[in-house]
Amino acid sequence: MPPANWTPDSWRSKPASQQPKYEDPAELDHVLAHLSRLPPLVTSWEVVKLRERLATAQAGQAWVLQGGDCAESFSDCEAEAIASKLKLLLQMSLVLIFGSRQPVIRIGRIAGQYAKPRSSDTETKNNLTLPSYRGDLINHSEFTPEARRNDPQQLLRGYERAALTLNFIRALSEGGFADLHHPENWKLTFVSQRTEHQRYRDLCSSIGHALEFFDAILSQPVPDLQRVDFYTSHEALHLNYEHALTRKSVRDGLWYNMGTHLPWIGERTRSLDQAHIELLRGIENPIGVKVGPTATPEQVIELVRILNPENQPGRITLIHRIGSAKVDQLLPSLVEGVLKSRLNVLWICDPMHGNTVSAQTGHKTRRFDDVLAELRSAFAVHRSVGSRLGGVHLELTGENVTECVGGASGLSESDLHTAYNTTCDPRLNYEQSLEIAFAIADEIRRP
Ligand code: PEP
Ligand code: CO
Image (cartoon, rainbow, N blue to C red):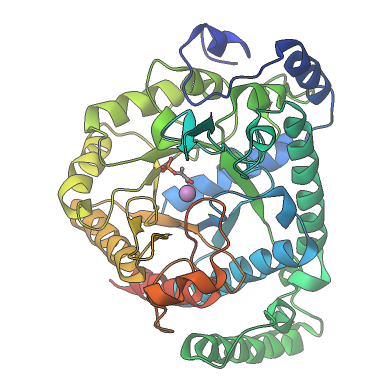
């Protein structure tokens, strides 16, 4: 049963922040009507399966790896960019499984991560003021009046890109490519012989030997290792878009967001009495909520109660993103508050969004050491209060970008300009991501 006083439209009577304004409401209505007739992108079975798997992570029996671009762009909806991201997440999950001896739940920030919150509705350059770029789902990043016009047609283009991306991911994860017997399929073309990659290759060869052993015992390839589960997630920001993909399941009569497996509520839109919470509280999906440095234990507890009145395990993933400088000070009371209230939540750490800084060169960047430091502190805080960190949320890409500084390859601020490709926040590149995966595996194994 949906919760009391909830309908798919009840969010409309609440204040909604971060919503684009459109010049032609009739055009928007027309697009939304079209969107709501198009087929779902995910099924209720998959959504329920993910919720159940997240409940196992909460119980300490699995680890969550959630990652992808800050903002996916429509122009990156290409075979190589999608496959590289999948390869990187598969490689990282292998490192984590091997290191932690636990299953890993893989969730991409992918196939729908097209809308971004902005601090201001407008941007001014050389005396020209235009609407801010809010992600490809809404407008274009170029600074011209045409590009910055909020265009309802982008909602349809976004849905289509999400469908194309998901179609390719599903095909890749179902067989051949994802077969653990052949991790060489996940090799990225540009990879050097640096330490992290060598460490990964050694790990693959150990896994290869173990599999040969079991294949020989079974007289056939170990069956369940020929495909992988892969789930999608994005920030449920654009309410009209998310509403158009909120559908009633014929199977159980319940409401699901069928545009993604795991929608999350961002740091800027988690106010208790607002529209984002209202729309998501009535759906069956597992829900992520970002929790930043201004959150109080009372707010978080109230938020979890509103979104999960039945205290169902697997329903709520709290994604803390506090910053390496403040995590030791602010995280303990949040985790303790939730623990004392006996609320079932899965905690995962986003060590990216509290650690964004400006480089001397003017680039928005993140220091690898800050990312790692926040993660390590998060492990320690959870351990010290008797909770458990159950996963990580990263901004990363399988491409060879230069957006975050540091890591084993020693990327410096003066390297940032060489491949700074993000349309929003800086992402970890392949080597930095793999290095983080090894560090996490070491932490999980620590008693
Ligand atoms: C994001 O995940 O890209 C983001 C905007 O995060 P937050 O809501 O935590 O700031
Ligand atoms: Co971001």
